[in-house]
Structures are given as C-alpha cells and as structure tokens.
Image 1 (cartoon, rainbow, N blue to C red):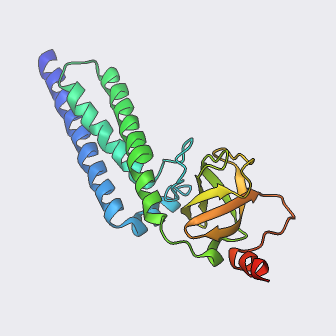
Image 2 (spheres, rainbow, N blue to C red):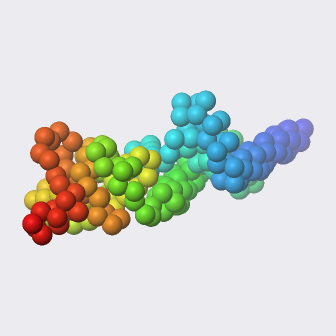
Length: 203
C-alpha cells in the first residue's frame, strides 16, 4: 500500500512538472513570436514586458524569462523526481533550475538580442538633448553604450577626461555617425553640432 501511494505521488508530481515544462515552454515561444501581445500582458503585472537593456539587477526579468523559468522548473522537477529524492528537495531543486534558466536566458540571450535589435542608424533629432542611462561604461575617451529613447546606442564622452559608469544618467549633446556624445546630466554649456563647427572653421 505504501509502495502504491509513493508511486502515485511520484506519478502525479511528474504530471504536474510536465504541465509546467510544456506550458512554460509554449508561452515562452509565443511571447517571442508575438512579443507585442505578451508584452501587453506582462504590463498588467507590474510592467513585466518592459525589459531593461542594461540587464543589471533584476532588469532581465520579463514575461518571456518568467515563462522560461517555469519551463525550466518543470524540467528540473521531472529529472530529479525520477531519482527518488524527497518531494520537498525536488521542489527546491526545481525552483533553483527554473531561476537559473530564467536568468541565463534573460541576461545572456534576450537582453543582448534586444540590444542588437535596437542598434543601427541613429537619427540625431530623436536623441539629441535627451537623457540616457549608461549601460556600458566609458572612460579615458573609450567607447561605451547608452540606452536612450528605448534603444541602445554607441556612445562616447564629450571630453576624454570624463568617466561614466553603468547606471549613470547622462545627456546626449550631439551625434556623429552612429556615435552619440554625452555629458553629465546637469550642464549649461552649449555644444555646437559638427556642421556648425565646420562652418565656423571655414569662415
């Protein structure tokens, strides 16, 4: 009787984990294919559809990564439940596997893909004068990256002696090609645009 009860419990648990695995994976696929719909759904739950391109802290959390985490928890549960491990331990391991899957997918796959999607030709009128968040540090004249107007843009400080760390808030003062030049957010200094500087030199 005890053997039958144990077998039934493991069988039911496997069914639950299987539902989590298939359901989470299915929702993750749908959220990737139909991102606009699932982002709207995520927005109903505290803005889960608003992915942070920096991926710092908990910025990797989105509707898609949560679905991947659920699927990962189901897969981990199925795997370890078949080993005869105590149910409470199986549950904890499943949650850990789910977290690792969600973090890995969000931080190292989805966020980088979103960055590439938003990169490309920069329209100066869209970002000049706007504040931005630094998502890749800039120091000693080196190139970095900012998040402005919902897209990632290659950036450089207006002065080589300026340093900006991830998370700093800056303002875009001009754009040259695909590179945005940024300064500290609070500044009253006026920076001429490249065409204006060229005209002054010719005069």
